[in-house]
Structures are given as C-alpha cells and as structure tokens.
Length: 363
Image: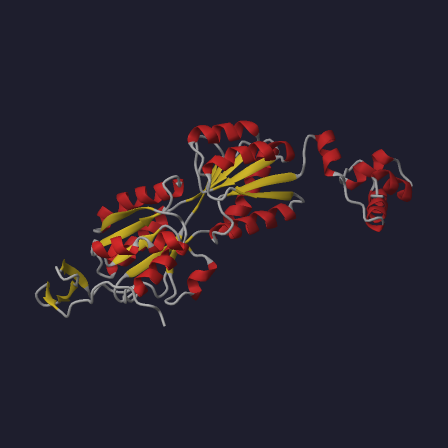
C-alpha cells in the first residue's frame, strides 16, 4: 500500500495537520518538528498526493505546455528551458503536441485546464477568437505569439532581420528571397513585416517565396522558384527548411555559398554541423521557456503578467559569401547565363553558361 500522510505523522509522533504544515514549510511549525517530519517522510518514501492537495488549496502545482511539433528541433529547447525552471520551482510540467494542427490546440487546452494551474502556448496557430477562449479556460501565457493583453514572451525578429539584411547587403546582394513558413504562423507574419519595413532602408529588394511547411521538404520545394527568379541569396523561415533548400540546390550542381547564400532562423543544434555550416538568426529558446514559466508563476500568485520581449541575433557561419555571380538571362535551350560584375565599368561581362538545371545524385 502507498504511504499516506497519516503514516508520516505517526512515525514523526505528530498530528496529521502538523505533518501537513511541516511538509509545506509553514513557519508556524518549529524547525525541529519540521526536520523530524521531513525525515519521517524520506524514510517512508512519502510522495504528497497532488490531487488531494489541489482539492484543498485550489492548486495542482502542475503547468501545461502545448507545442506545435516536437519533431521540429526548435521546440525541444523551449521545453527543456521550461522543464528546468518548473523543476526549480517544485512544479510539474504536462507536455502536449498538436502535430501542426491549429484545430487540436483548443481541445487540448480544454483537456488540460482542470489538471493544471495554467497553460503555456508555444507558437500557437490558433486564431484570435480561439486564443480568447483558451484564456477563459485557464491562466494562459503565450510564447512566440502576441494577442491583446494576454501575457506573452515575444521573440522579437527585428534585430535578427536587420542584421541578416545588412550582412547580405554588405556582401553585394541586391535582391534576396524570403522562404516563408506556415500561413497560420504569427512569427512568420512578424518576420515578413520586419523584412518589408527594413529592406528598403538598407537598399535591398526582398522577394517572398510563398508559405511552406516548416520542414526540410518545405525548404527544398523553394529551390526551383529561387533559381527561376534569379535570386542569389535567401533568408529562410527556419533552419530545417534552410538545410532542405541547401540540399536541393546541391542536386542542381550549385554550390552554397558560391552560387547562392542562405541564412536560416532559430540556430538549432544541427545548423553548426551542416556542410557548409549554416548562418542563422539565433532565437533564445531555452530562455523563452524559462521566462514563460516565471511569467505564469507570477500570474498564478496574483500578478498581472505583461509582455516580455527577448531579442534575436545573427550567427555568421559559412553559408553566405560575396555575390560575384549574377544570373542575367534564361536561355531558350534551358541554360542560365552567368555574368561577373566588372569592377571598372560597374557592368557585367559574360562568362560561361551555367549547365541546365538537372538534378545530380550526391556522391
């Protein structure tokens, strides 16, 4: 049979009420008594019944965390940060994955609400009305999403976008592509707005390359459009997509960064191990998870929350380079003619054509 609080009280020689207060750290109980009760609990391997505690205090000491896709390397770091901070605070964390389905989020909140003291929604794909419904069910904190006055941890794309644009401009690029993520992603929307605002100031034209699945296949699917539009550089919604794009470009016999420069987003662990190592915009993912737990804890304790903004930064590696080549024209025979800038005349001089874009099997 499981050890009960009554067993602990009997072993320590105190009442059940005193044992309960001692284990909760009540200052009304003397230090010697608290130590005796804790020793008894340890000897009996006693674990407090969280359900019973919730019935008496209205608290479960448990938080919920909902993410779109645990297979996406962006989210485990957020989870790790949240889990570590929850553990430090003596809280449990229930994790749920919506498999990139916005329709699954609100039902999950409804399921978790009676079991937790609050929910953290990471990169939520819900619309505005659904977010309001979720917040009416339980205390809610958003990560990488904003909505009205809901407490949120916002990963500000502005610094990272500006640094990436200035870097590409300094390398001589004038037109770049943006390979977008899911149409329902609010972070993608914020990034597009930052690009539209900052690019003209810096002297760059940004060409949107659609909304795609946030995985390697989604990035690979953008390669043909990138080349058809004669773009020599791209900023990509996330690192997984950027790695997929780079791999697809290689099947066409193109080299990154000699022929096309690529910048990802997130700085997942695989980015530094890629060949070439991927330049990317770093998101403070673990910090976001920790901060979200702290913010939810403040709300549970009676605080009002608010919005906390965390910055992004550019991490330069080997996937970007100067733009010595420009694709000038598409030839009727399917070949693309490449030209080099002439530094003396400011024009370009023909070079040998790039072979027709046919896939090559990697060795």
